[in-house]
Structures are given as C-alpha cells and as structure tokens.
Length: 568
Image 1 (cartoon, rainbow, N blue to C red):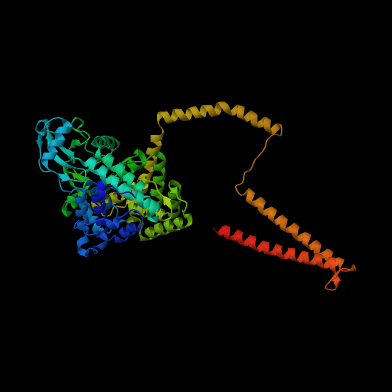
Image 2: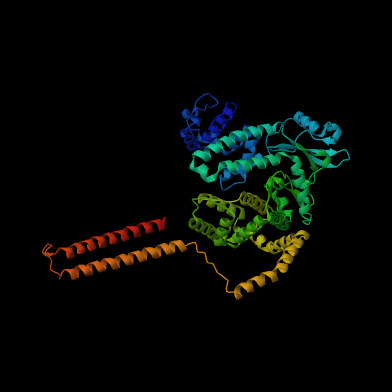
C-alpha cells in the first residue's frame, strides 16, 4: 500500500480512532503487513501509536465516538449514521449515541448559507424569500434545513448543502479506498467481506445524496407512487427554487415521531398509521421498485392532521422485477418461519465464492429461523432476521445482493417506527395480510400494453411455425431417422469404473489360469528342478503369486485414493 503525503493526517486520525475504540488488534495486524507503516504514524502529541498505552475505559465511551466522527467530517458522520441503523454490528449504547448524528450535527454559519443560496439561485435570500430563518431547523452530515416562506407566503423549508463538502468527501473516500484495497489484498477478513466493493457502494449512495436535484426527483416519484395512501404525505419540491446544492420543498406541519410524548401517542391512532406505513413500504420495495431507504424515526413526521410524512429522500433503493420476486419470497418465508425456503432463496439470489459451504449455510439458516419462530412470530423482527441471514451468508462464502442488505436495514428502521406508533404492531401478520394485494398489483403492472403486444407477437411466431415443425417431426419418425441423445454428466466416470472392474476380472482370470497351469506342470518330470520340483512349474507359480500380490496391493491403494478424493 502506498501512502500519500497529502493524506498522512487522515491516516493518523483513522489509526487513532481504531486504537481508541478497542480495535488495537486490527491496528497491530495492519502494522505487521509489509508496506503499510501504521506503526510509524504519530498521534496528535507526537508519540508513535505503537508506544501509546491503551485508552482508559471512560475515554472511549459511545458519546465520544459520535463526537470524534463528527470532528472528522461529513464522510465519517455519514458512516456513523449508517452504523446507527445496524444493531447487528454495534451494542445498544453505541446505537443510541450515534443516533444523534442523524439530525443533531453542528451547523455551519448563516453567512455560508447566504453564499451558497446566492450562488445556486442567482439572487439574494431577501429577494428570493419573503422570510428566511437564521437558525437552522436541523443540521445533518450533508446539509442543514431552514424554515422560510416564498414571496407568495407559501411555507417551505430550504435544505442547504455544506460548503466544499464534495471535495472533502472525495478526498476521504480516496483514503478509505486505499485502506479497503489493502485489507482486501492482504487479509482473510478483507478477501471474505470485500471491503472495497462495500465502500464503493457507500460512496455511490453518498454521491447521490449530494445531488439535491436527484432528491427532488425522488420526492416527486415517491409522491406519485403513494398518492393512493391517504394517511401518508410526501412533501413536494419547489422546482424553481431547487438546484444541485439547494432544495426547497413544502414545510411539513407537525413534529418528529421521536418528539411525541406519551400523552400525544395515546391520543394518536397509531395502529392504522403503522399498517398504512408498512403497506406503503411493501409496495415501494416489491411493486414500484423505488423505496425510501432511510426511514429512521428522525425522518418520519406526524402531521397536525394525524398523518405520516416521509422526509429526506436523499437515500433511496432500487429493485429490479426479478429481485422484487426474490425479496417477496424471502420476506414471506421469514414471516412464516420457513428456514429451508429462506436458505434456498438466499443461495439462488447470491454470488457463490469457491469456499461456499452450502450444507452449513442451510443448517445455520434453518437454526436461526427456528429460533426466531420459537420466540414467537409476532415478536420476530424481519429486518434483524434479514441482517442475520446476510451475516451467516458472508461467514459461509455467499455474497448476498446489496438490495437485500439495504432492505434489511430499511425494514429494521421501519419496525422501530411501527412499534413507536403501535407497540402491538405485528410486521409478520402485516406481510401476510398484504401479500395478496401486492401480487395483484405486480400482475397488473406486468400487464402493460407493451408486454401484451410482445406476448402476442411471440404467440403469432409460434403458431405460424408450428405446422411446419410438426411435419418435420412426423417425417423424421416415419423415415426412422429420429435419434435420441442422452448426455450424462457422470457417464465418463461410470465407463472408467466399468473398465477398471473389467481389467481386474481379466487379470484375475489370467492369474488363476497360470496357477492351474503350474499345478498341472508339477506332474511332468524334467531335468531342470527347483526345490525338488519341476523348475518350469515352480517359475510359473512364483510369477502368478507375485502378480496376484501386486494386483491385491494395487486394488487397495486405488480404492483408498478414490475414497479420499470422494470425501474431498
């Protein structure tokens, strides 16, 4: 691995972060690799990291991790946000601490907001807006949100991107990709998990989130797809006031679901809202192919009229029709507690490495689903189960599609929101209730005019060519020219085994003949004798005995090698 002089400070910060939070074993492993040189990196006080004592327990608390990631910049804040939604990777205390990074990051100055808005919209804030609040409503890794009003009085919120964030993220990913490529090339963990591929997918996700024009398009598309859901609201963008770095959209009149107190939740009709939200997400993933991939509680609002509003569509997931069918099957299998089906679908939709252990994978998946089923299907968390399936797949040499991991993360966050709305909400029962309607929607979606015409054209070609094909088949049968060819993958192995058996039988018959011939020659007196017997007879007997011994040894050796090869 080649170190860039421009990135030495970043390398030092990453190494210090790993050391501080109990990953010194990983740091030492990196230090031992040739060319990495992490042992020589210096801490902020000039002391080599390898010479520093491990941090005290209190100096590496979950809150400090959130603070340190925030101090390292937006890329690491975004990484903390992703980790906050992965309870399969971090303890509960860290999840709660990192959740702060979702909307409570240190804001940037109003002067920088004015500069960005003027550069993007081409006019001053005072001219573009009737009102624009100086204090941000919320601040996150990529940007911050301000309340405002258009010149006609329409209430909006304006999302402004952090200054110079694209350049900073590009530099951070250059460093992280160097580290990921090194781990993939020199460690078994890297070869197994392929960190560089994961990092490139993460980079693509952030790049899409940095483009507010894409987010505006996502808001329009999602609003159109969910227009039938009367209890769900998707704020729409104001096109003339939205650019690549500034997004203006309708203000949601309400508050975050996490800000609702116990009394407000009691007054709220949570059960229908949870059902509607879950059904909407199933439609997004399994029918529309476009879904809001970051529904953590901070992105879900309860409006003043008692509806759910979904905000922050910078991160979305896409699912192709074939993937939608696989995801629907695996969701149904998990909700029914059918571990064998879950394993088979996961194998079918994933990439297999050379070391893939199918029996062990099937056994562990069946064990996992059976354990969850025994705990009670009504308590089963589909998102967590999908994440565990993904983890078991990685451990057994199976690379699951990124769509499955993204769906797992989304379902996990959705389950949290659903249980806030209705503590008795059963996601598995909701899947079973809505699957019939989802299948009908998928069929109607497939019955487009283009698909129907394509099927009719294929049927026309088939029916037009059918008489000629039938005539050729009948002529072939009449002329006794019909041939049936059977190909067997194991035919050569069977033939080789039969030849080996035939050779052994033939050699045994020849040796038996030699022994019988030698016995008959014993009765013929000759001048040449060995051991007091006719010499020719004794020679034939010795040759036959030696050949028989060699045949027996050869059979044992060949059979031993065959059994060993079969086991392997």
